[in-house]
Image (cartoon, rainbow, N blue to C red; front, side):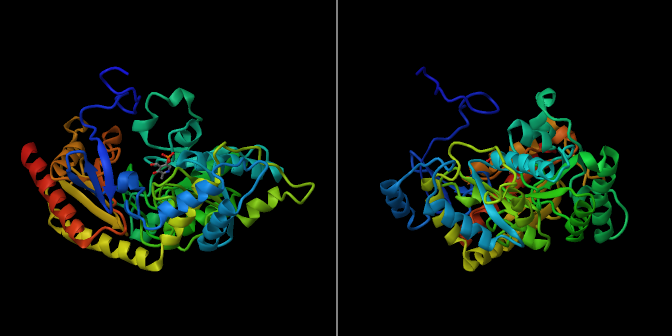
Length: 449
Ligand code: PLP
């Protein structure tokens, strides 16, 4: 090992001086070696929904380690992944009754794409293979997930390796240019899907993927509920599967357990990760409708096969951890998350009329701030000014960790900051987060003058 750590890390390729070493964590706090306590106002990357001190986990882990940690699900099963699948499908909406386990959010979406393709192939529609995504969405870093993603900053430099799948506009009411009421705008935006399906040919489209409430690229942006009703209608009409990417929004982040419950629309596949284990182990899943799983009925000699899987999928140790975690998402915890989200938005009230803040939006305990150079025209800042990065730095100086989003995507999206504290964050910490962020924005605005 040289004088710099050997970790090869994203963005810069290495661990830099701005990386703080965290020795321990508890509740909503990250603690450095010299005892500095940082409030984790982003739950990591919107992962640690229950904070860093979930009770009972140590016993769950040691019990499972003593029993069995790893099994290949290709040939063996175990009560832990089975229990977890039952827990998830009992609480998932509609007929989403089968859980396919993998390890990361990207893999969950990759699995959903291949499953959509396999489903159509089983039904004799071999040409249905494309996935329609939305610009400024993020569905993962792997090539398939990135192909469906519309986050241009993360696609940049890899376009030649990506599938040429189509994208429609994001559900981004703040920047929609459609005329009419919020409902009319939402319907107009959703109809872009219909136009794109017709242009591409419905016989080539396997699925449409969307985050119900947008995550890192345009945090907390979400449409009027008629948007997803219209999306559902269009998908049904053209035999296109609807994949709801709830990797970030699942597990209480936006209020209900799953964000699709906000819209009362049931997708065909719902992908989950992050909050599924709340950061205690890497695990994710695609939860699949009865209509899809029926095509792959193992007891039917004519049933289809889904030749896809990952080594660590559904390992009993991760499943035991996730099962313990999922049981913590009680109605009380979800309600606390909603209340803390409201409290935080109220604490940010001074920013609503602030000259550099164009939008303060939220869904449950996910809050998005959008910075603009001009509130009238909604003109974004020059990306080189790195406004959200500067706000992030100023908040960190006050021991509050926020999530600066992908910001300044092509200079079109504006600069964003996401706040997504654990649902269990204390009221005192919410006040501290609000004060730190308001101060940070005011300071940065002052510097920009
Ligand atoms: N989908 C959404 C909505 C996400 O926010 C993310 C990660 O931020 C992913 C997918 C990818 O998940 P992972 O980083 O676990 O592969």
